[in-house]
Length: 450
Image (spheres, rainbow, N blue to C red):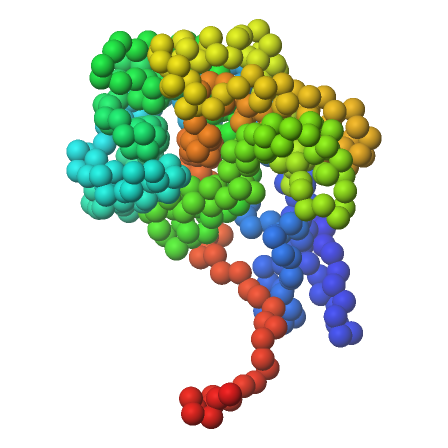
Protein backbone atom coordinates (compact mmCIF):
# COMPACT_ATOMS: atom_id res chain seq x y z
CA UNK A 1 0.00 0.00 0.00
CA UNK A 2 1.42 3.36 -0.99
CA UNK A 3 2.11 5.85 1.77
CA UNK A 4 0.45 9.26 1.99
CA UNK A 5 0.77 12.37 4.12
CA UNK A 6 -2.18 14.49 5.20
CA UNK A 7 -2.49 18.26 4.83
CA UNK A 8 -5.25 20.03 6.71
CA UNK A 9 -6.18 23.48 5.41
CA UNK A 10 -9.31 25.48 6.19
CA UNK A 11 -11.04 22.46 7.62
CA UNK A 12 -10.36 20.23 4.64
CA UNK A 13 -7.98 17.27 4.57
CA UNK A 14 -5.86 16.52 1.54
CA UNK A 15 -3.76 13.43 0.97
CA UNK A 16 -0.32 13.86 -0.58
CA UNK A 17 1.38 10.79 -2.08
CA UNK A 18 4.81 9.87 -0.68
CA UNK A 19 7.44 8.98 -3.28
CA UNK A 20 10.31 6.69 -2.22
CA UNK A 21 13.68 6.42 -3.93
CA UNK A 22 15.93 3.38 -4.17
CA UNK A 23 18.11 4.66 -1.30
CA UNK A 24 15.11 5.22 1.04
CA UNK A 25 14.77 8.91 0.23
CA UNK A 26 11.19 10.11 0.69
CA UNK A 27 9.36 13.06 -0.84
CA UNK A 28 5.87 14.51 -0.73
CA UNK A 29 4.37 14.69 -4.20
CA UNK A 30 2.94 18.22 -4.35
CA UNK A 31 2.55 18.33 -8.14
CA UNK A 32 -1.25 18.60 -7.81
CA UNK A 33 -1.22 20.75 -4.68
CA UNK A 34 -2.15 24.01 -6.39
CA UNK A 35 -4.94 22.58 -8.48
CA UNK A 36 -6.41 20.77 -5.46
CA UNK A 37 -5.96 23.41 -2.76
CA UNK A 38 -4.96 26.70 -4.39
CA UNK A 39 -1.75 26.57 -2.36
CA UNK A 40 1.87 26.45 -3.47
CA UNK A 41 4.95 25.56 -1.45
CA UNK A 42 7.44 28.27 -0.47
CA UNK A 43 11.06 27.08 -0.41
CA UNK A 44 13.77 29.73 -1.00
CA UNK A 45 16.86 28.13 -2.52
CA UNK A 46 14.88 24.92 -3.10
CA UNK A 47 16.49 23.36 -0.02
CA UNK A 48 13.52 21.03 0.52
CA UNK A 49 12.27 20.72 -3.05
CA UNK A 50 12.86 17.82 -5.41
CA UNK A 51 12.69 19.06 -8.99
CA UNK A 52 12.91 15.68 -10.71
CA UNK A 53 13.41 11.96 -10.41
CA UNK A 54 16.91 10.93 -11.45
CA UNK A 55 18.90 7.71 -11.68
CA UNK A 56 22.28 9.37 -12.26
CA UNK A 57 23.81 10.45 -8.96
CA UNK A 58 23.06 9.82 -5.31
CA UNK A 59 24.54 11.66 -2.38
CA UNK A 60 23.92 11.40 1.34
CA UNK A 61 25.16 14.49 3.09
CA UNK A 62 24.81 13.04 6.57
CA UNK A 63 26.83 9.91 5.85
CA UNK A 64 29.25 11.41 3.31
CA UNK A 65 28.22 9.12 0.43
CA UNK A 66 28.48 9.95 -3.29
CA UNK A 67 27.52 7.40 -5.97
CA UNK A 68 27.60 7.66 -9.76
CA UNK A 69 24.98 5.24 -11.12
CA UNK A 70 25.33 3.33 -7.84
CA UNK A 71 29.13 3.07 -7.89
CA UNK A 72 31.02 4.80 -5.03
CA UNK A 73 33.11 7.79 -6.06
CA UNK A 74 36.07 6.25 -4.22
CA UNK A 75 35.97 3.20 -6.50
CA UNK A 76 35.77 5.26 -9.68
CA UNK A 77 38.61 7.56 -8.60
CA UNK A 78 40.80 4.51 -7.98
CA UNK A 79 39.87 2.25 -10.90
CA UNK A 80 38.22 4.25 -13.66
CA UNK A 81 39.30 7.03 -16.01
CA UNK A 82 37.42 10.18 -16.93
CA UNK A 83 36.11 9.09 -20.34
CA UNK A 84 34.82 5.81 -18.92
CA UNK A 85 33.18 7.68 -16.04
CA UNK A 86 31.63 10.09 -18.54
CA UNK A 87 30.16 7.15 -20.46
CA UNK A 88 28.80 5.68 -17.23
CA UNK A 89 27.04 8.93 -16.31
CA UNK A 90 25.70 9.69 -19.79
CA UNK A 91 24.55 6.21 -20.84
CA UNK A 92 23.78 4.61 -17.48
CA UNK A 93 26.23 1.68 -17.41
CA UNK A 94 29.91 0.89 -17.59
CA UNK A 95 30.86 0.41 -21.24
CA UNK A 96 32.10 -2.86 -22.66
CA UNK A 97 35.22 -2.77 -24.83
CA UNK A 98 33.33 -2.10 -28.07
CA UNK A 99 31.28 0.70 -26.53
CA UNK A 100 34.36 2.24 -24.93
CA UNK A 101 36.35 2.18 -28.15
CA UNK A 102 33.46 3.74 -30.10
CA UNK A 103 32.93 6.53 -27.55
CA UNK A 104 36.66 7.26 -27.14
CA UNK A 105 37.17 7.33 -30.92
CA UNK A 106 34.46 9.92 -31.52
CA UNK A 107 35.37 12.08 -28.53
CA UNK A 108 38.94 12.13 -29.84
CA UNK A 109 38.09 12.77 -33.51
CA UNK A 110 35.81 15.73 -32.76
CA UNK A 111 38.43 17.66 -30.77
CA UNK A 112 39.21 20.24 -33.46
CA UNK A 113 37.21 23.46 -33.68
CA UNK A 114 35.87 24.92 -36.90
CA UNK A 115 38.49 27.39 -38.13
CA UNK A 116 35.93 30.21 -38.10
CA UNK A 117 35.52 29.78 -34.34
CA UNK A 118 39.03 31.11 -33.90
CA UNK A 119 37.71 34.44 -35.14
CA UNK A 120 35.59 34.60 -31.99
CA UNK A 121 38.74 34.72 -29.89
CA UNK A 122 40.05 37.66 -31.91
CA UNK A 123 36.91 39.58 -31.01
CA UNK A 124 37.35 39.24 -27.24
CA UNK A 125 39.41 41.79 -25.28
CA UNK A 126 42.99 40.88 -24.41
CA UNK A 127 42.25 39.60 -20.91
CA UNK A 128 38.75 38.06 -20.78
CA UNK A 129 37.80 35.72 -17.98
CA UNK A 130 38.03 32.19 -19.44
CA UNK A 131 34.57 31.24 -18.14
CA UNK A 132 32.94 34.02 -20.15
CA UNK A 133 34.80 32.88 -23.24
CA UNK A 134 33.97 29.21 -22.72
CA UNK A 135 30.28 29.85 -22.22
CA UNK A 136 30.06 32.15 -25.24
CA UNK A 137 31.87 29.73 -27.56
CA UNK A 138 29.96 26.66 -26.33
CA UNK A 139 26.68 28.48 -26.93
CA UNK A 140 27.85 29.49 -30.39
CA UNK A 141 28.48 25.87 -31.40
CA UNK A 142 24.78 25.68 -32.15
CA UNK A 143 25.31 28.08 -35.05
CA UNK A 144 27.87 25.75 -36.62
CA UNK A 145 25.70 22.63 -36.36
CA UNK A 146 22.23 24.04 -36.98
CA UNK A 147 21.12 20.96 -38.88
CA UNK A 148 21.77 18.67 -35.91
CA UNK A 149 20.01 20.31 -32.96
CA UNK A 150 16.86 18.19 -32.75
CA UNK A 151 16.56 17.32 -29.07
CA UNK A 152 14.21 14.44 -29.85
CA UNK A 153 16.49 12.74 -32.38
CA UNK A 154 18.74 10.18 -30.66
CA UNK A 155 21.38 10.23 -33.40
CA UNK A 156 21.64 14.02 -33.40
CA UNK A 157 21.87 14.00 -29.60
CA UNK A 158 24.68 11.44 -29.75
CA UNK A 159 26.67 13.54 -32.23
CA UNK A 160 26.20 16.65 -30.07
CA UNK A 161 27.43 14.72 -27.03
CA UNK A 162 30.57 13.60 -28.86
CA UNK A 163 31.26 17.09 -30.14
CA UNK A 164 30.77 18.81 -26.81
CA UNK A 165 32.85 16.30 -24.84
CA UNK A 166 35.63 16.59 -27.43
CA UNK A 167 35.63 20.33 -27.99
CA UNK A 168 35.32 21.77 -24.48
CA UNK A 169 39.01 21.07 -23.59
CA UNK A 170 40.05 22.79 -26.83
CA UNK A 171 37.72 25.73 -26.14
CA UNK A 172 39.05 25.94 -22.58
CA UNK A 173 42.72 25.82 -23.58
CA UNK A 174 42.14 28.45 -26.26
CA UNK A 175 40.54 30.76 -23.70
CA UNK A 176 43.75 30.58 -21.66
CA UNK A 177 46.02 31.04 -24.67
CA UNK A 178 43.99 34.08 -25.68
CA UNK A 179 44.47 35.65 -22.23
CA UNK A 180 48.28 35.39 -22.48
CA UNK A 181 48.56 36.30 -26.16
CA UNK A 182 49.87 32.96 -27.41
CA UNK A 183 49.00 31.02 -30.56
CA UNK A 184 45.99 28.70 -30.48
CA UNK A 185 47.37 25.15 -30.85
CA UNK A 186 45.67 22.26 -32.60
CA UNK A 187 44.67 19.24 -30.50
CA UNK A 188 46.87 16.14 -30.56
CA UNK A 189 44.62 13.12 -31.13
CA UNK A 190 47.41 10.71 -30.18
CA UNK A 191 47.12 11.77 -26.53
CA UNK A 192 44.65 10.96 -23.80
CA UNK A 193 41.87 13.40 -22.93
CA UNK A 194 43.76 15.04 -20.04
CA UNK A 195 47.20 14.90 -21.67
CA UNK A 196 45.83 16.56 -24.80
CA UNK A 197 44.38 19.38 -22.72
CA UNK A 198 47.63 19.90 -20.81
CA UNK A 199 49.60 20.03 -24.04
CA UNK A 200 47.25 22.64 -25.51
CA UNK A 201 47.51 24.64 -22.28
CA UNK A 202 51.27 24.68 -21.78
CA UNK A 203 52.96 24.01 -25.12
CA UNK A 204 54.12 26.66 -27.53
CA UNK A 205 55.40 26.46 -31.14
CA UNK A 206 58.96 27.36 -30.17
CA UNK A 207 59.99 24.25 -28.25
CA UNK A 208 59.33 20.58 -27.65
CA UNK A 209 56.77 19.75 -24.97
CA UNK A 210 56.14 16.43 -23.23
CA UNK A 211 53.17 15.94 -20.92
CA UNK A 212 54.09 14.70 -17.45
CA UNK A 213 52.06 11.45 -17.07
CA UNK A 214 51.74 12.01 -13.32
CA UNK A 215 50.13 15.39 -13.88
CA UNK A 216 47.77 13.92 -16.50
CA UNK A 217 46.78 11.19 -14.02
CA UNK A 218 46.12 13.72 -11.25
CA UNK A 219 43.97 15.82 -13.57
CA UNK A 220 42.07 12.69 -14.62
CA UNK A 221 41.10 12.01 -10.99
CA UNK A 222 40.12 15.64 -10.40
CA UNK A 223 37.78 15.56 -13.38
CA UNK A 224 36.17 12.34 -12.14
CA UNK A 225 35.55 13.89 -8.72
CA UNK A 226 33.74 16.84 -10.30
CA UNK A 227 31.79 14.88 -12.95
CA UNK A 228 28.36 15.17 -11.32
CA UNK A 229 26.85 16.20 -8.02
CA UNK A 230 23.09 15.83 -8.20
CA UNK A 231 20.82 18.90 -8.60
CA UNK A 232 23.25 21.69 -7.80
CA UNK A 233 22.93 25.24 -9.15
CA UNK A 234 24.59 24.71 -12.54
CA UNK A 235 22.97 21.32 -13.14
CA UNK A 236 19.57 22.78 -12.29
CA UNK A 237 20.31 25.61 -14.74
CA UNK A 238 21.09 23.09 -17.49
CA UNK A 239 17.87 21.21 -16.78
CA UNK A 240 15.77 24.38 -16.58
CA UNK A 241 17.07 25.78 -19.86
CA UNK A 242 16.74 22.35 -21.44
CA UNK A 243 13.12 22.16 -20.30
CA UNK A 244 12.24 24.61 -23.08
CA UNK A 245 13.53 21.93 -25.50
CA UNK A 246 16.62 24.05 -25.93
CA UNK A 247 19.61 22.37 -27.59
CA UNK A 248 22.47 20.82 -25.62
CA UNK A 249 25.03 23.52 -26.47
CA UNK A 250 22.87 26.40 -25.23
CA UNK A 251 21.83 24.47 -22.11
CA UNK A 252 25.44 23.70 -21.17
CA UNK A 253 26.42 27.30 -21.92
CA UNK A 254 23.92 28.35 -19.24
CA UNK A 255 25.41 25.79 -16.86
CA UNK A 256 28.90 27.25 -17.37
CA UNK A 257 27.65 30.71 -16.45
CA UNK A 258 25.93 29.33 -13.33
CA UNK A 259 29.12 27.51 -12.35
CA UNK A 260 31.13 30.72 -12.66
CA UNK A 261 29.68 32.17 -9.45
CA UNK A 262 31.94 32.34 -6.38
CA UNK A 263 29.40 30.35 -4.36
CA UNK A 264 29.62 27.46 -6.84
CA UNK A 265 32.46 26.68 -9.25
CA UNK A 266 34.36 29.84 -8.43
CA UNK A 267 34.87 28.72 -4.85
CA UNK A 268 38.26 27.06 -5.47
CA UNK A 269 39.50 30.29 -7.04
CA UNK A 270 38.24 32.15 -3.96
CA UNK A 271 40.25 29.74 -1.75
CA UNK A 272 43.54 30.72 -3.37
CA UNK A 273 42.63 34.41 -3.20
CA UNK A 274 41.86 33.99 0.52
CA UNK A 275 45.21 32.26 1.14
CA UNK A 276 47.00 35.05 -0.70
CA UNK A 277 45.12 37.60 1.42
CA UNK A 278 46.27 35.87 4.62
CA UNK A 279 49.89 35.93 3.41
CA UNK A 280 49.75 39.57 2.34
CA UNK A 281 48.18 40.61 5.63
CA UNK A 282 51.11 39.18 7.58
CA UNK A 283 49.01 38.60 10.70
CA UNK A 284 49.17 34.83 10.53
CA UNK A 285 46.54 32.13 10.23
CA UNK A 286 45.27 32.45 13.81
CA UNK A 287 44.20 36.03 13.16
CA UNK A 288 41.91 34.91 10.35
CA UNK A 289 40.62 31.92 12.34
CA UNK A 290 39.56 34.39 15.04
CA UNK A 291 37.96 36.66 12.45
CA UNK A 292 35.98 33.73 11.08
CA UNK A 293 34.68 32.92 14.58
CA UNK A 294 33.67 36.53 15.29
CA UNK A 295 29.94 36.88 14.50
CA UNK A 296 30.41 40.62 14.04
CA UNK A 297 33.18 40.22 11.47
CA UNK A 298 32.04 39.80 7.85
CA UNK A 299 35.09 37.65 7.02
CA UNK A 300 34.36 34.01 6.25
CA UNK A 301 36.77 31.19 5.53
CA UNK A 302 36.31 29.94 1.99
CA UNK A 303 36.56 26.22 1.30
CA UNK A 304 35.05 24.99 4.57
CA UNK A 305 31.66 23.32 5.00
CA UNK A 306 29.14 22.34 2.34
CA UNK A 307 25.49 23.04 1.61
CA UNK A 308 24.64 19.32 1.46
CA UNK A 309 27.41 17.43 3.27
CA UNK A 310 27.12 17.49 7.05
CA UNK A 311 29.98 15.06 7.27
CA UNK A 312 33.31 14.96 5.47
CA UNK A 313 32.76 15.31 1.71
CA UNK A 314 33.89 11.93 0.26
CA UNK A 315 35.55 13.79 -2.63
CA UNK A 316 37.55 15.80 -0.11
CA UNK A 317 39.00 12.66 1.45
CA UNK A 318 40.32 11.54 -1.94
CA UNK A 319 41.60 14.93 -2.99
CA UNK A 320 43.12 15.62 0.43
CA UNK A 321 45.39 12.60 0.06
CA UNK A 322 46.35 13.80 -3.40
CA UNK A 323 47.12 17.28 -2.09
CA UNK A 324 49.35 15.99 0.68
CA UNK A 325 51.13 13.66 -1.72
CA UNK A 326 51.80 16.44 -4.20
CA UNK A 327 52.81 19.03 -1.64
CA UNK A 328 54.63 16.67 0.68
CA UNK A 329 56.66 14.57 -1.73
CA UNK A 330 57.26 17.02 -4.56
CA UNK A 331 59.11 20.29 -4.50
CA UNK A 332 56.53 22.74 -5.80
CA UNK A 333 58.81 24.79 -8.04
CA UNK A 334 60.68 21.78 -9.36
CA UNK A 335 57.44 20.06 -10.29
CA UNK A 336 56.20 23.24 -11.93
CA UNK A 337 59.35 23.43 -14.01
CA UNK A 338 58.65 19.93 -15.32
CA UNK A 339 55.04 20.80 -16.07
CA UNK A 340 55.54 24.04 -17.97
CA UNK A 341 58.91 22.97 -19.41
CA UNK A 342 60.29 26.45 -18.98
CA UNK A 343 63.63 27.69 -17.68
CA UNK A 344 62.40 31.26 -17.51
CA UNK A 345 61.98 32.42 -13.93
CA UNK A 346 59.47 35.05 -15.00
CA UNK A 347 57.11 32.36 -16.19
CA UNK A 348 57.08 30.74 -12.76
CA UNK A 349 56.59 34.17 -11.21
CA UNK A 350 53.55 34.77 -13.41
CA UNK A 351 51.92 31.65 -11.99
CA UNK A 352 52.13 33.30 -8.54
CA UNK A 353 53.14 30.07 -6.85
CA UNK A 354 54.89 30.36 -3.52
CA UNK A 355 55.62 27.61 -1.07
CA UNK A 356 54.28 29.89 1.68
CA UNK A 357 50.84 29.61 0.06
CA UNK A 358 50.82 25.87 0.64
CA UNK A 359 52.25 26.23 4.12
CA UNK A 360 49.35 28.51 5.04
CA UNK A 361 46.83 26.09 3.52
CA UNK A 362 48.19 23.16 5.51
CA UNK A 363 48.26 25.19 8.73
CA UNK A 364 44.70 26.34 8.15
CA UNK A 365 43.58 22.76 7.53
CA UNK A 366 45.31 21.47 10.67
CA UNK A 367 43.71 24.10 12.91
CA UNK A 368 40.23 23.65 11.42
CA UNK A 369 40.30 19.87 11.87
CA UNK A 370 41.14 20.21 15.57
CA UNK A 371 39.25 23.35 16.59
CA UNK A 372 35.95 22.70 18.44
CA UNK A 373 34.31 25.67 16.69
CA UNK A 374 34.73 24.03 13.28
CA UNK A 375 34.12 20.48 14.50
CA UNK A 376 30.80 21.37 16.20
CA UNK A 377 29.59 23.15 13.06
CA UNK A 378 30.95 20.40 10.80
CA UNK A 379 32.98 22.92 8.84
CA UNK A 380 35.42 20.47 7.32
CA UNK A 381 37.73 21.49 4.46
CA UNK A 382 35.74 20.79 1.32
CA UNK A 383 36.62 19.76 -2.23
CA UNK A 384 37.12 23.39 -3.28
CA UNK A 385 39.76 23.92 -0.60
CA UNK A 386 41.92 21.03 -1.79
CA UNK A 387 41.26 21.30 -5.53
CA UNK A 388 42.37 24.93 -5.57
CA UNK A 389 45.65 23.98 -3.91
CA UNK A 390 46.28 21.14 -6.35
CA UNK A 391 45.45 23.19 -9.44
CA UNK A 392 47.82 25.86 -8.19
CA UNK A 393 50.53 23.26 -7.67
CA UNK A 394 50.02 21.96 -11.21
CA UNK A 395 50.56 25.41 -12.67
CA UNK A 396 46.92 26.01 -13.63
CA UNK A 397 46.26 29.79 -13.48
CA UNK A 398 43.75 30.86 -10.84
CA UNK A 399 41.22 32.21 -13.33
CA UNK A 400 41.19 28.80 -15.03
CA UNK A 401 40.06 26.98 -11.86
CA UNK A 402 36.32 27.26 -12.62
CA UNK A 403 37.03 26.21 -16.21
CA UNK A 404 38.62 23.02 -14.91
CA UNK A 405 35.49 22.48 -12.83
CA UNK A 406 33.36 22.94 -15.97
CA UNK A 407 35.41 20.37 -17.88
CA UNK A 408 34.89 17.87 -15.10
CA UNK A 409 31.19 18.64 -14.67
CA UNK A 410 30.41 18.38 -18.40
CA UNK A 411 29.45 14.65 -18.39
CA UNK A 412 27.07 15.27 -15.52
CA UNK A 413 25.42 18.19 -17.30
CA UNK A 414 25.05 16.11 -20.45
CA UNK A 415 23.63 13.14 -18.52
CA UNK A 416 21.16 15.33 -16.64
CA UNK A 417 20.06 17.14 -19.81
CA UNK A 418 19.67 13.83 -21.67
CA UNK A 419 17.69 12.28 -18.83
CA UNK A 420 15.41 15.30 -18.53
CA UNK A 421 14.58 15.28 -22.25
CA UNK A 422 13.39 11.67 -22.00
CA UNK A 423 11.51 12.13 -18.71
CA UNK A 424 7.95 10.76 -18.85
CA UNK A 425 6.95 13.65 -16.58
CA UNK A 426 8.63 16.23 -18.84
CA UNK A 427 7.39 19.77 -18.34
CA UNK A 428 8.88 23.16 -19.03
CA UNK A 429 10.27 24.56 -15.78
CA UNK A 430 8.02 27.24 -14.37
CA UNK A 431 8.45 27.94 -10.62
CA UNK A 432 5.71 29.85 -8.82
CA UNK A 433 6.13 32.83 -6.50
CA UNK A 434 4.55 34.62 -3.55
CA UNK A 435 3.79 38.13 -4.75
CA UNK A 436 4.62 40.85 -2.21
CA UNK A 437 4.21 43.99 -4.34
CA UNK A 438 1.41 46.58 -4.38
CA UNK A 439 -2.03 45.02 -4.16
CA UNK A 440 -3.32 47.69 -6.49
CA UNK A 441 -1.84 50.84 -8.02
CA UNK A 442 -2.95 53.58 -10.40
CA UNK A 443 -1.10 54.97 -13.37
CA UNK A 444 -0.13 58.58 -12.65
CA UNK A 445 0.53 60.86 -15.65
CA UNK A 446 4.06 62.25 -15.83
CA UNK A 447 3.07 65.86 -15.05
CA UNK A 448 1.32 64.79 -11.84
CA UNK A 449 4.22 62.73 -10.43
CA UNK A 450 6.19 64.16 -7.51
